[in-house]
Length: 155
Image (cartoon, rainbow, N blue to C red; front, side, top):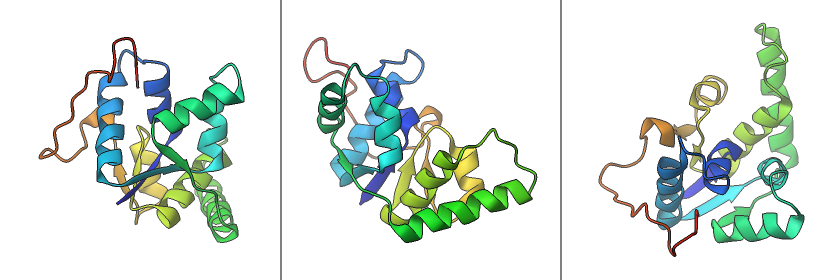
C-alpha cells in the first residue's frame, strides 16, 4: 500500500505538536508498516521551511521514512482543473494551488492520503481515501507503539 502524506501530519511530528503529535506519529508509523509513504515536491518544500537548512530537512524526511515522489504533467494539469472548479464554485483565495497539487498527487500516485485537512480533500478528490489521524482514522486492528524509538526522539 502506498500512502501519500500531507504537510500537516509531518509538521505535527517534526515540531512535536502537543495536540496532534501522538496520533500523527502513530498514523505515520502505521502507514510505513503497511508499505511506502510518499510526498510530492510541494510537501517536501513546505516541510523544509521548518528546518534550519536543507540537510536537516532531508534527514528528517528520511528518518520519517518519506520517499520523494514527484508530480507528473498529467497530475499538475488535473490539479489545475480542480482548482479552476473550486473557483467556479465560489472558492476564495483561502485554498492555494499547493493544496490541489497535493490532492491530485495523492490520487494519482498513492492509495490514500494521510492529512488533517480531510474535508477539503474529500470534497475535491472524491476517489481519494483520506485518513485523518486527529480523528483517529486508522485501522483499529493495527496497534502502534507511540513511544519514541530512543529517549529524546520525537519521530
